[in-house]
Structure formats: structure tokens, C-alpha cells
Image (cartoon, rainbow, N blue to C red; front, side, top):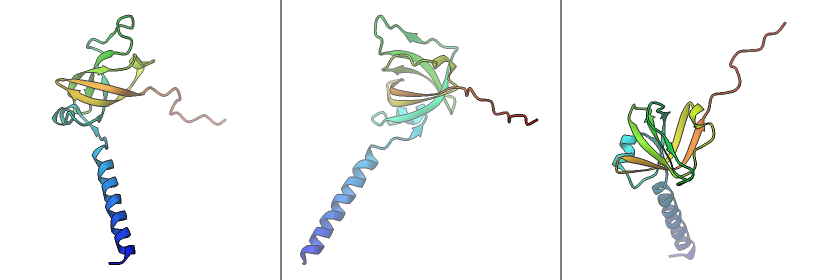
Length: 128
């Protein structure tokens, strides 16, 4: 066998190994049900902050823990523990994306993305 063929086979093998390892660590948008079924994986959960249930942030005790309830896009409401301080304008957010894992019946988020209301109007300007 020629050295070129051996090198090509090794390169292809390494490329397949790299692709397989990156696919294993990918995250997807999901809901609480799927996250609970696969608690070892990290998920992106999209939903809305439930203002009717309690939120807890005690900066004097633990400034890097904020607890609240979120309703995902399929209507399931779960408690969320964000391992960061409470984000600015959290109460004004229209939609929230959480990044983290489900542990027991609580979603532990490492990061949060907020979609706040736009300060711009959708109206077109009047031309006079």
C-alpha cells in the first residue's frame, strides 16, 4: 500500500472523530419535558417569565443565585435557578432563553438571554 493511501485513511479517520465529538456536545432549543428526559445534556429553553409565582434573589446571602418560574413554549412551568445575579430589566422581558440542565424538577441555568420590548415603533414615519 502506498504511503499516500495510508495518510489519506488516517486523515479521514481523524476528520470523522472530530465531527463525532462536536456532534455529541451540540445543544438544541427545547422544552422542559425533553430536558428532564435527558438531564445529562445542556439545552436552550425558550419561554416566558411567570410573574404570578415567586422570584427569589437575595444579594446579601448569595448574589450569584436567582430563582424564578418560567413557562416554556409548550405551557410547562418549572422553577429555574440561575447561577448568576438577577439580570437588569428582567421583569420587562418578553421572552427568555435559558441555557442549562434539568436536575430533579428544577432547571439549573448557567446563562440567560433576554428579549426585551423594542424601544422603536413599527409604525412608518409620516411624509408630509
